[in-house]
Image (tube, rainbow, N blue to C red; front, side):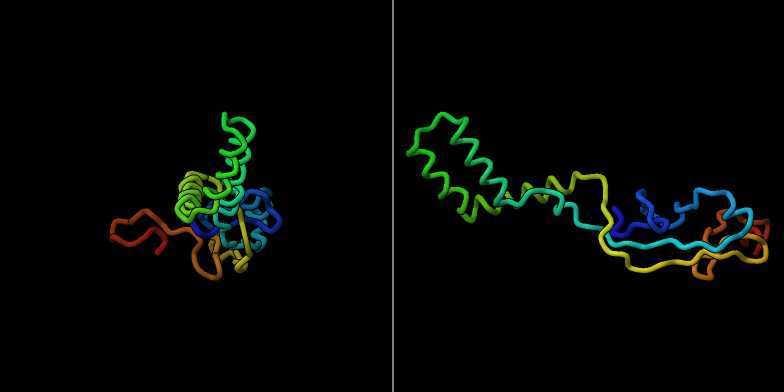
Amino acid sequence: MSERLFGLPGAERMYFDIESVEPDEPDFYEDRVPWIIEEWSVLPAVTHLPSAEHVLEYMAEWVGEQGEVDEYGCEHWTDFVTDPEVVAAAENLRTVFASKISYRMADKMLREHLVTWNEAGDPLLDGQPMYVSRFLDHDGGGVGE
């Protein structure tokens, strides 16, 4: 997954690649109005999950309330939840779980990219062609080159 997200200023939906960002209003293309694309860092997915400590506390509480142990058995759970091996296993669980999260959340805006237009009406991203021509003419060069 991408470590960057791209979107219009104030947009709720962002994209993994900058070429996917397009204004919603057709006037931008018809009038060749310059526009901005924001580039954001991605918040690590693991930050969306409870801490290992919280997970272990929940498990200890659940065993005390739902499990079939007496008070003596529950007292030993406090030892388990602080055991380095158990804490490491809980952290590993968070890491594996986070790797399965398919969405990304923007964290910090890194910079703005300016989209302008060349004389032919093609969009330029920070002064460079925004879209790379994938077609070759008969001489092996790109169409329009």
